[in-house]
Every structure is written in structure tokens, then in C-alpha cells.
Amino acid sequence: MAKKAVASLQTGSKRLTKAIKMVKSPKTGAYMFVESIMPPERVNDFINKK
Image 1: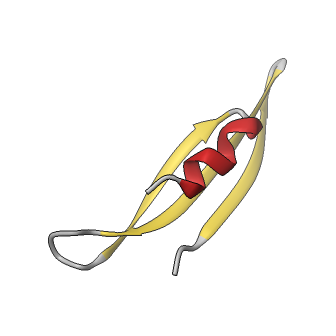
Image 2: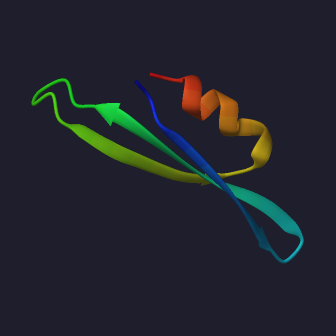
Image 3: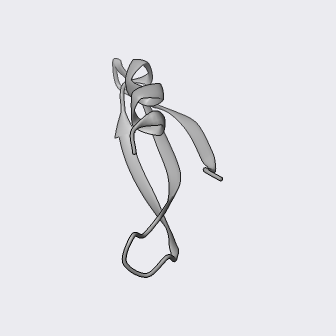
């Protein structure tokens, strides 16, 4: 089950979002977190991408 957290960030004139998703490692089977800062319109693509 994927966990997602999204927080809004504002820096100057740009509006950015920090997205965090939990992914399972194919080697060990352990879960790890992947973080990325991006424009809000790209968040769904990031979360849905495997």
C-alpha cells in the first residue's frame, strides 16, 4: 500500500509542492521513502509512477 504526503511550499513567485511516497525495494523488500519538490501539477504523475 502506497503512502503519500503532500505539503505546499511557497518560495518567492513560484509555488512548489513537496511530495513523499513510500516504495518497496525490489532487492530487499524493505520500504523506503522517495521525496521530490515539484510544481503542483506534476504531483499526481509522481505518485502514480512506479
